Amino acid sequence: MLGNQGALWGNAMTWWDHDTGSIWSQPLGEAIAGPRKGEALEPYPATLTTWEAWIESQPETLALDAPGLSSRFDLDRMAIVLDLGTEAAAYLVKALREVGIVNDTLAGVEIAVVIDPKNDERWAVFSRQLDTSVAELELTDEGLVDINSGTVFDPFLGVGLSGPLADQSLDRLSAFTSFPSDYRTFFPDGRTWPG
Image (cartoon, rainbow, N blue to C red; front, side, top):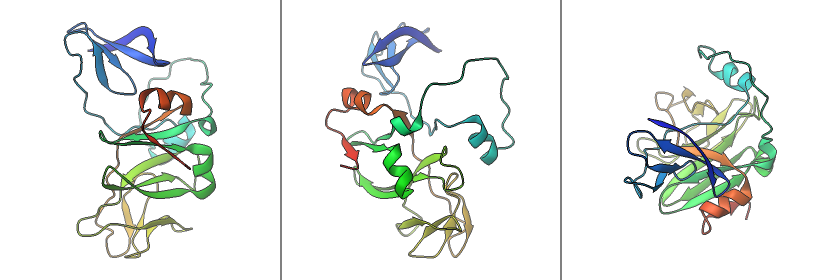
């Protein structure tokens, strides 16, 4: 079981492993000290967004209603980071909001980084690999459209909505937000978009 270790490493939170005494880096998802040093956790897709933006797309969500302070994180000052092991990239949110989507290739994986046009507080990173083709995605009034097939996908969930490949979904990739300067601390050789 992991809990807040209480110290920062590279200006990011660390976790305490109650079972082994190992200390884990939040952005790397890797043990940096203790018996499990060098081991990595399996990443899961997540997003930093407002509650209003989340509940709009996930109305069935249940959450603990506990008083707290509002976050001081301004998404425009952050980057969306994708780490695929052999290569990492950061996509500056402010620039991404201007274009809405970036089709890219990272570590040999065809990806799309998307700001939801219905609510620019929601973002997602998808693999563009479908069953038998690679989607070339653009945002339109209909949603996230594969210009090769005409299939429309939900820009936040990646679910097929209409068109010939509507029975397919885009795989959501594990990404996280970071301040650009902190990204450089953990991924000094990583790319930044726009470059």
